[in-house]
Image 1 (tube, helix red, strand yellow):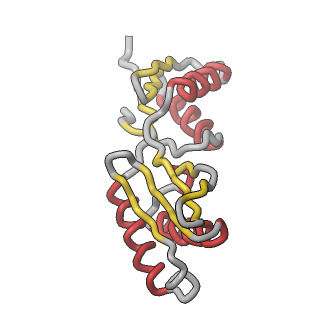
Image 2: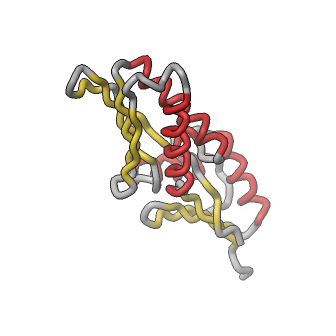
Length: 165
């Protein structure tokens, strides 16, 4: 029997690029006339993988998030790599919005992706290995079809296709 070809579906985010984008955003906030004296701030916790935006109002907080999104886009970090919470009231009549950096594929999403691949009725084998999925098949063309199918879908987080062999 011929050796099966395979690839892994993973969801990773380069935290160094996120850190650079947050630093660029903080620098731009000190230079932009509408954000300069607004009292808004942005911080990154690499240990918790969270981005925290504090601002005097929802409008200003959303402006800071827009600036951060533009910096992330320029650094080729997908915008859905950060899931933002609802604005929360903080001390001193300010607003805090926390963004969690999404990394890894959780079990529910892995099961959903597995089911959708099986529904294609292609001759592939999908195994869930922790926070990644391994898709294997005897034909490389079939694997290409699966990758094209997954790229067309939106799962709310960025997916990468690695270890293609």
